[in-house]
Length: 403
Image 1 (cartoon, one colour):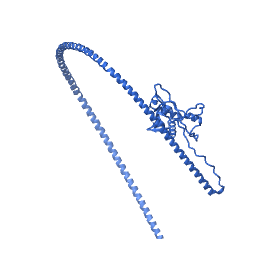
Image 2: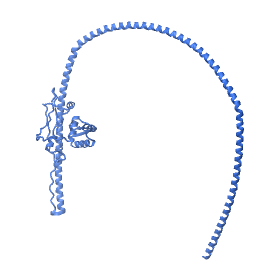
Image 3: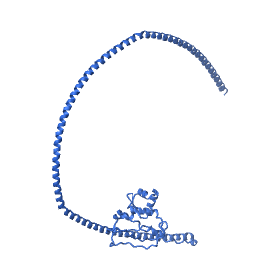
Image 4: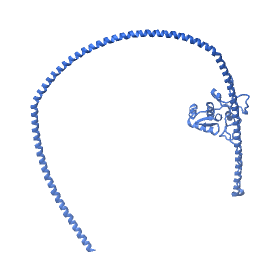
């Protein structure tokens, strides 16, 4: 261990001595390089100063020589420029004199040519005036002949037209009368067919509605039976789980069918010569069982009122029923109406669709002055109550959509 330490110590001293020697050598080299650099810099500065002195002397000499040469060349150049200007002025005066003489000659020739052309044009114009005057007299003569012939032809045409009118007037009168009779008969037949179709459609709708009501009642009866069975099973399970001390559950209320209020179906009377207002008849509806679906008795009386009469164009497009056609509608006696209440938004929208025979959502918003949410909610409620249907983005009253 001691030998290893001695070896390491000897190696350490050797390395330290090498580092010292190397540092001394580097210092010596740096000093020598610095002295060489200073000597070289002094030599370069001296060379540059000598070069600048020589350059200044050569530049001064060249400038002096150039100035002397320019001063010596100024006078000959001035004399040559003066001679050139005088020669140019003389040539310009000669050229202008030649141009002026040629211009005068050309002007005289052009003036003579223009005078000759003017004379030729004047003669030509005189000849054309004579020809135009002769042709104008001929045209006037032809116009007079044509006017005379036209007067004769018009007299003949008027006489022929009077004869044709006298021959065709009785035939046209008879044809118009026959056509009016045929149109009246066709209109009567169409009215009869339309009334019969309206009665058949009304009866078909009522029978379908009655069948739907019967099926809904049967479904509610089945639902009530099923509910009673579930209550019995619940009581049995409670008895099995809790024993005889189980609380007796109260009997559930019987299930009743909720009925939504629907506007009364109206039928327009026959159109006669004197226009009369339609006589509305109300359809009996079952009493509602939930306050959220229907109003009270006075409100129901207001809801079962017939919507306002349509316009003349709407009345013409509705099916017409005569006094002799069978109408399967039963009048319902209602209590005397109380004080008038403002109509609900559903009634306003329904009446508008009934009068307008259908409208789009934007039209409903614009005409009634309501926003998009009110219109959408009201239309959804009317669609759920089967009062309004939607066809091709157009909302229609249920009866009009069926017709």
